[in-house]
Length: 249
Image (cartoon, rainbow, N blue to C red; front, side, top):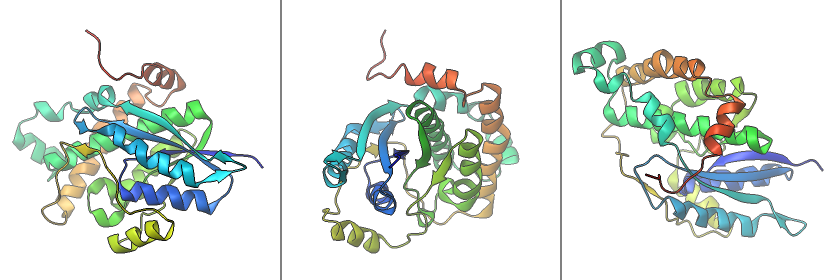
């Protein structure tokens, strides 16, 4: 039986935890390569490995685990490319060009997009067919609404030759999610790393916020990805080959 490798973005939270379970149970050929990303403002990123270890102990075939943790990758070098020109714009210009995009939505956009770029690189280097993540529409952030998760991000992944899987995308009930983990023998608790830039939504987003995020992705981020050939194998080897824990002086 031929193995099918999947790059699984594992935040260490319960959404990605359950996503991994669902994938492993949906096809016995699937092998998960789990990975965690650190945006430079993450606290205790290595905690996510504990979730991967729990998965590795449970899901085995012929005595061998179907889950391998690839580690924590720092994505700051890619995120920095997406700061500009937004950080140098006056608020009036920001509002004119990118409608109602808030700072919290901006941070999520550039962070999630950078994670996708790194996942594509890892898929190239690990012979993966799919990329997966635990995004849920009910969370309400623009990066998890259909315009990004069902249109733009799948298109980005497919442009590099892979497919995107969203195993819990339509799951709306946290209670149901936790019950599914319990049914599999997992305590529905995790020591999820903390993003210090992450900020809960005050309310559901309106159309102006969504349009602003889409515009920044379409007008700034995507052209930059193409211009710098960020999805090339050369860049995969360049960036992934320089994994590090600390920057050197």
